[in-house]
Length: 187
Image (cartoon, rainbow, N blue to C red; front, side, top):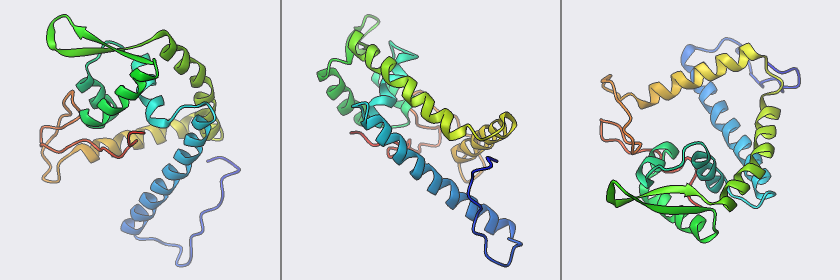
C-alpha cells in the first residue's frame, strides 16, 4: 500500500464480520472508481477528447478492422451506443467504416490518419495518469489487485444459479444478460 494513502476511518468495533468487510470493500471500490474516473475525464477533456471517444479510439488502435458488433462487445456497451459514437467520430474524421468484402451487411471499422494521430497524442498523458495512480504500489500489490479484479469480473459474469457463462463477441453472455451500458455512456 502506498505510504501516502489516507488511513481508512474504521470506527470501533475494530473487528468487522466477513460480510461487513466485503460490503465496505465494495463501497470503497465504487467510491475509488468514481474519484479516479472524474480525474481521468478531466485529464482527457484537457486533451479535447471524451472518455467514450478515448475508449473507442484506443480499442481500434489495437485492433482495427472489427465490426460494430465486435467493437460493442469489447467496450461492453450495446451496438446502438457504439453507433451514435461512431457517427460522431466519423464526422470528426477520426474513424471510417469500410464495407466488409465477405459480408455486404457489415462494415469494418478503421482509424483514419487523424484518428490515429489523436489517440497516439493522447495516450502518453493517459498512460502517465494511470502510472501515477498506481505508482505508490509495489509490483506484487499491483499483481494481487489485478488478480482480485479478474476474479471479481469472473464472479460478476457467472449467473446466480452457478451455471458457467461465456461471453459472446457482442458482449452478451449465454445466460441472455446484456452488457453494462453505463460503464462509459456515449458522449
